[in-house]
Image (cartoon, rainbow, N blue to C red; front, side, top):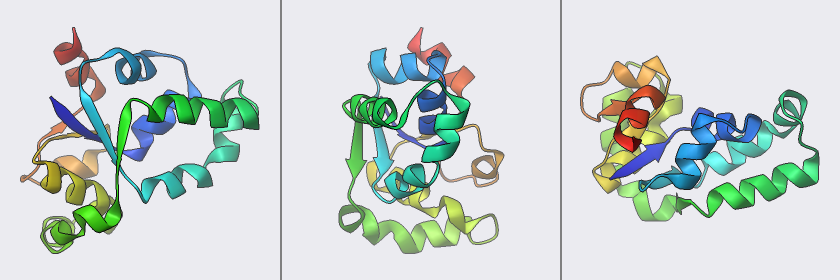
Length: 136
């Protein structure tokens, strides 16, 4: 099964060695993240360091480790779905468009805890609790 993961799921796996990180590293799921979200993750580097026990080098190592389990979707590869994603998220929140683009491209659900995704009705959205049920 394939899932597009949102940035907060990835950040959660970086901050705490818990359930989210275990699912990412041990599940049979194929996970994807839009390329541009790696820039977003970089913006939160100091926050992650402050909330975790990681230093900068350990954090970068952990990012590399997690990205072994997540496929990065290049923007140029998935961009043809941007107009459709704009339509879907227009009245909700434009910040979530990259994930909708990726989900449309892959024809798969999104893994997210964000309630904004649930406001649209085109792409299925799974919470971590729902992912865990599938994992177990």
